[in-house]
Image (cartoon, rainbow over all chains, first blue to last red; front, side, top):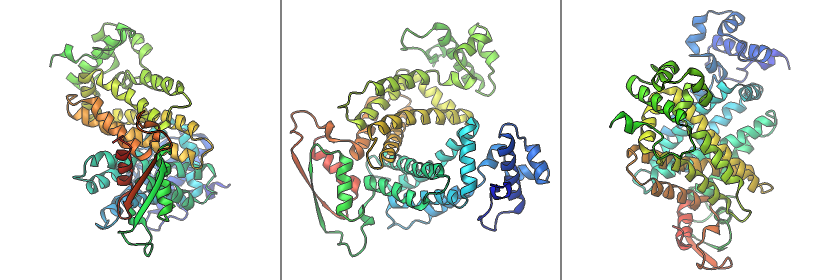
Length: 241
Length: 241
């Protein structure tokens, strides 16, 4: 793969300033050639042909240039959640919010796979990534806490679902990254989100025309069956499996 | 509260070397008096009356002295999981493993509450804590992945449950810390773990004498009911609520 095909920003929206893209491209070229630790901000700005102040206008630190799209994605997620209608089923809504993150990775497979390899090797970047993941999880949990306010164990329920959504998302993301971006990212995240919805989702997910809300579902289960299998059974009875 | 009552180590087991305890006590006294960032390792060793090398024999960095018991607790958790019998229900087992962590905090309420306040104020310590939480979550997920090997979506199921357990644990822990360690930690973690088991636990949790594994449970639900409520209903039907 040539270093130009490795440059991030391909497929990105036009709103991003070219200088920012140039800095990300230069940074990754150097990280791949020399290693992350061996690359300084001075090296990056020299290759990009800009001054140090330009770098710090876009990125507070060298770590931030590794994850140039998370701030935008987090803002998109918060806007998406804030735009929810009262009738939106909350678990489905947070699952759809998580899809935005996978879509950001899938927009630029080459860059995402390179970053995955880099992050695995540099402990400081792993720590940075954990803090980013935690911010996504808090955004989902805050939304759910609002929806579950007044419900018994509402914050507990919210926190557990937010964590489950993030873990399912990350499972799908990692399997896609390990396929070098070759697998179908959308199919992977669909499967992961279905899994969470099977445990926590509400009947708002029943397709229309598939019976009204007063339909009765009867599930017969052996006591020995694990509960999640019972839930799966309910799911498939309701045609959501 | 006097600074001697604030010293960690009260209630800890005797196997810990006194010098290690003295370093933790000196560190926290200084962190509380001067702030974390303003305290150096040199300040800590001067107050404890030992040399720098003694500090680094016990703690790789200043951050590690803030969380002196996590390595031991993580090792205890891994040993607990490794000692699982084949017939142990996996979800209950990881819930019990998570209880070990809350117990570590509850052993020393004053220290835990002080550390909670400190960690909220210092971003570097927040990041350190996230990396610790991530290690607990990986330990639980690895155990569950082994138990769910060969099952369809086994790693996904394992990762989601591990994340749910950690989130529920942390919800209980935070509410206990916010009560300044006054609430009943055991009751808080019980409630949190019951919540996870309601979503994912298996029927191994049915109390003995409460019917054999061939009992039949019939659940009748409106289609409009959220699935987690259906699960709660199943739980209470089975007498595990």
